[in-house]
Length: 159
Image 1 (cartoon, rainbow, N blue to C red):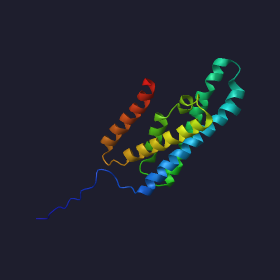
Image 2 (image 1 turned 45 degrees about the horizontal axis):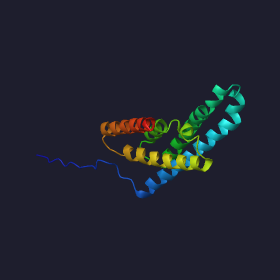
Image 3 (image 1 turned 120 degrees about the vertical axis):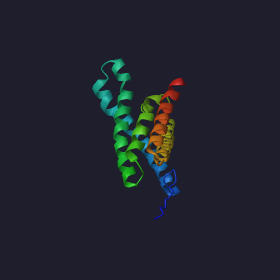
Image 4 (image 1 turned 30 degrees about the vertical axis):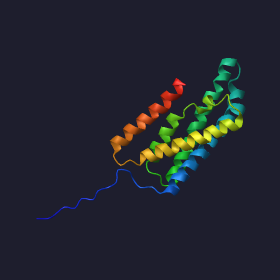
């Protein structure tokens, strides 16, 4: 009778420290890119088009942030794919949902503070979602990603 040999695989897919640092750096750069795009869109495009009345002009920050986040997320997805990150689309979608509205959150701060917070939060978010995406069991990984998305959306609303 033949014996079967089962290979046990680790619960988390291996990733070297260089990739983890690269993902954090990519996240920081995408955060800065998001802020720069949002700032440029707000100042040069949306304010010129929509600032006829004050109510529409106040929403320009939200609209520019959303547009900038979508554009930067596409750039982030391409960079993560080229970096060979595991499940890059999940990472980018999780980060985009978690940090949706970041330009409005930081709009009252000084410019350098806004840039710093954007870089830090995007670096942390990209790192966290990349780490969660490495979990081999898809059901557990998706549950943890959903919990992180909920936590990052609920906690800022409580503050």
